[in-house]
Length: 177
Image 1 (cartoon, rainbow, N blue to C red):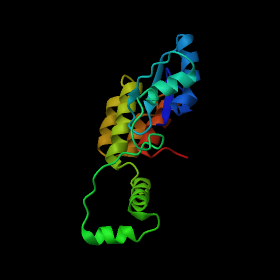
Image 2: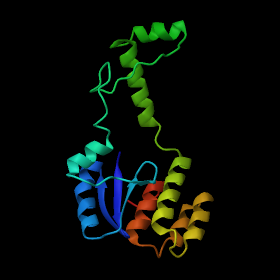
Image 3: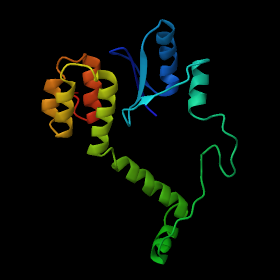
Image 4: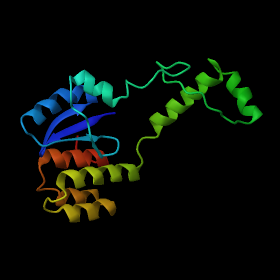
């Protein structure tokens, strides 16, 4: 999970839980108002910041879960797949067998299936509401967001702090490079 962390209106850190935990702890220790966002959803992530950064990351990633059968280090789960005989025939002739080919097909589909416009819109809305819900132009910017008017949204966000504006536009997929 990729996170973006803000201290008040300033971008503090970006990365995995392990990469941002130390900076979050330092900001919290100095009394800063710290919010972490999941970059995939734009939603606030509540992290337990007790302990060393590695402990924070391990706690968040569920490292304390009991061991499972199978290949627990890989996170493999056995499930049933129902296919037609011609599909099984094709899969069995592929390099690495049926399971390997299914994994490759799923990975390719996941890479090709980036966030939908609706998912990007929802992520931008979630982050904007948490970070700038009381900012000037917020309501107009959200109307423009749901109307699909990214340019109009950017105009209404002009007075927002730059880091917040850039993050919301990045979630929407319209941030200037």
